[in-house]
Image 1 (cartoon, one colour):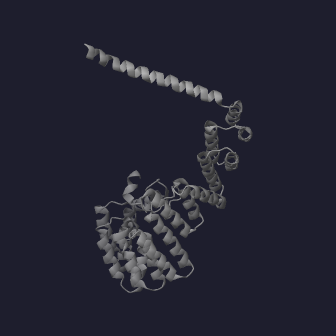
Image 2 (cartoon, helix red, strand yellow; image 1 turned 120 degrees about the horizontal axis):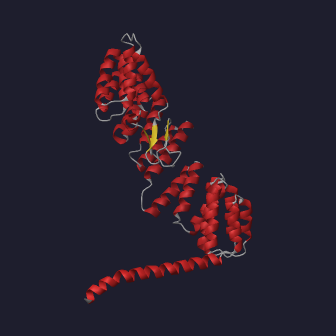
Image 3 (cartoon, helix red, strand yellow; image 1 turned 120 degrees about the vertical axis):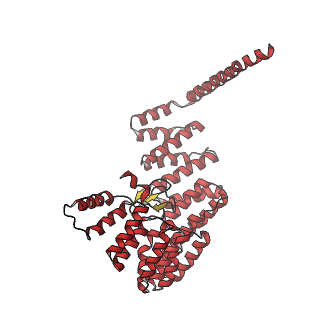
Length: 391
């Protein structure tokens, strides 16, 4: 009997505890709200009535700040920045920093927000100085380190970006090899543009030390060797993509074709394409092989090859080229094939060619760093099966 009564009382006790805690929370919330200066409500009213400058003037004239009001300051500044009103955000955050009795923690928060304001305004030198100050105080301040890395990235200060990326790696205990490899690739391209192939190759070596599967490094190396007339070396570099970064094979097919033609071995290019098509099902591989077969062996051979590939792995772009070849071989009296071809051309004309695997950004140009989410190597060529079903 006593045990049964105890079980019945347990829910009552839990409910009583929850109710008491809720009453205590509400009491503290009312006390906190009561302690806010009346001018704060006045300032908030200005914001609600779309009078932000008057609101900022009110907030900046407050004589005393506590943790609650400071948090509201920081939140308002962040809101202004996200709305593109960077000048107002800067005014609020600078006012906070100039307060004499601000705690070290809140000072760092305000300093970090101000650095973000300056970055949004394009005042990168000021943002850099604030980040360096924050890192001097706390070398493991990840937010400041990441912002500093992004600043150096925008300024193309690649060696400094590498140094900061290594500090981030030490803080997280995680490698930043992929990103650092791209920084070295950026410097390799800079050296290449300055006609310094030795420095470019040195940077590519460092990139591959960081990330042995860096497809970009092999592509740059291939293009440097091709430009210097070292076609065998260029072919070797391009073909390493097959095992290291096959998703980028479609990006070097024309260069590879040019190199094989330059050494008088164009038939080897067709043989190579036919071999890798069995393992990598990119539509660009099939289309390049079909174009070369048409050029070297005639339309009938190209039609037979393309017809087989489209049957095995359906592709709208494959069908598009198949129709183009077929229209040159048959008498389309009623014009139905031409109508189908024209419709496909329109459907495929504005389709994106690349997509970011991280944020979904799409475009028609290759970016090694996504313009939207700023991640490296996240943008890949779109395989047609990813979007063909929606047409």
